[in-house]
Image (tube, rainbow, N blue to C red; front, side, top):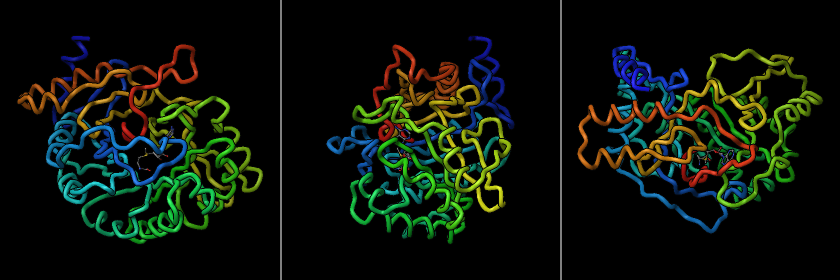
Length: 345
Ligand code: SAM
């Protein structure tokens, strides 16, 4: 442990690499900038619980993100809650777009949103320096969509947002869909057609036990194999090679060459061995895994006046504690104290 820590410190050079105790290189930071959300998706929120954790100032997120970038983070994804609700978002993106890695490279700057406010914000986000966007969308049928989000007219708003993002050049545009048996699994084939018609990359995500309520069961998860088989029946697919080892999605192209889909299967085909991610919650806690049972209070240390060097050492030390893997579906599995909307997905 000490040797790994010392070698991690000595690695803070122009080509800094943040490695954990399992030899994984951590280069992807997800930052939640609010745990407020304007949707109440049935599989995520109970609808009775509001925001639970404080938000920090934009400058404070920036200060913490800078520390991570100095240590080897090259990709930053802003999330929430719903990040488009956050006052100061464009300022944060402008500042992040101006940051450089120790090697002098700009960051790969992405954002995940439900898309409800994207129509008006896509062009300003792009102009501020955002590279890419992922829109969450769990149905292509407006009635099913609105039964999930529990917000009237949300389908039209999101569709306009997706089109505005594409027009603004926030491409390749990814659409993430969480499938739940009995809720929206009838949307699979429609999403395959949507991917081709709208020229977007649709990625299906297996439902994980991270909801506010108690909905998750192995039976409600729609596994990767089933999704591929169902699409293949109507639109033949061919598996595509991974672009990088830490890529979470398995990629499939349509055999006629028009479009592709992805499947992220954390439950049935976990990819923890190639995990390159670490998270910062809206109240400034580091989470080394979605399913961590412990959080690491970076912001508390910053507020208490720790020096940059001390904060950097704290991050390095925290990364060393990153869990080898999650234990979804195993006896004794414990849900984390925060659900997805409060961690930052
Ligand atoms: N509000 C933004 C959005 O909708 O994309 C960002 C936050 S949201 C929590 C991020 C993503 O997590 C969404 O795509 C959502 O569908 C997904 N998500 C929420 N709960 C999940 C769960 N239990 N398992 C898998 N994905 C989940």
